[in-house]
Image 1 (cartoon, helix red, strand yellow):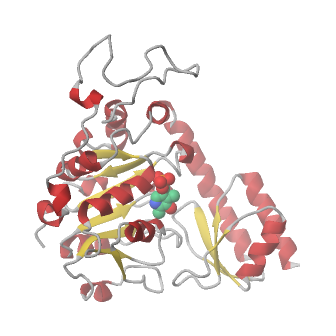
Image 2: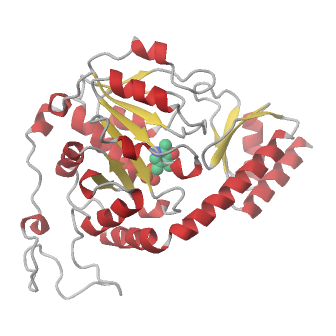
Image 3: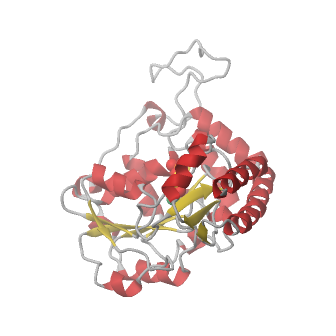
Length: 351
Ligand SMILES: *Cc1c(COP(=O)(O)O)cnc(C)c1O
């Protein structure tokens, strides 16, 4: 299928003129900045936050470019992946007409953002082993589908989606394929970032919220063709990432990689230990294999277990109502001491 970005953009987005902020109009060096109604006396905090942030996040993108091995022009930065998901749907889905394709069970935000933007959701459920059902997909790629969301490793199932299936989807759809790699650091498969030049309709999303341990910063990234990142930059709120978040993200990417790697190693060890111990409990029926920082666990009475854990001040996610996840809870792999507490509580429940 030939991909034509202009054809799939919403008509109003195609000709959209972005808000032109003071710092976009003037990008040179100046010492007297009286163009943006900022407070030139300073901040009410010790830090220097009186100036608006760089709307293009240039220094941050330069660091990301080195760490992720992608050109600056192919990087978009959002206020968390959640903002990126919303902007992508808004860029291509004509409200009340176009559709979003999802593969349940998966991350709930795709559907929430689709609903908010009045885009219909088409579902092609994953197979029993949580892979994309290619034959079922073939009959479901109608013209109104402008965007498909694939999550790999998938939340809440924890498995990676087969690269061949992702390629098939990329080739057969007229629309954009968003590959959400939020958990990529916990998984041995290679990122699709290096495949962006092969597929003009591919958007790879990553985040600093998981392996980097920076969920509070709200820093999500999209890697895509220059044409696509340009569209996102034109329609985003001008100052979507604050200066504190930009500065701290640069600091993490510059000096925090070793700490990130160490944390990922610990989480992987803990994941294996937790999976073994959970599988030994009498009421646990299955611990699904995971390439992420959580485990999907099928058990006899998930609601009872959920409640008993809450009584012990331990909170997990009840996923038993999600498609294909009957009787399952999703448990995030915690710090070693937290995992010990979880296991002790589970043994207690076992009685
Ligand atoms: C946690 C998670 C994210 C991260 O979202 P942010 O808005 O960047 O914090 C993205 N996608 C999936 C599937 C997730 O589980």
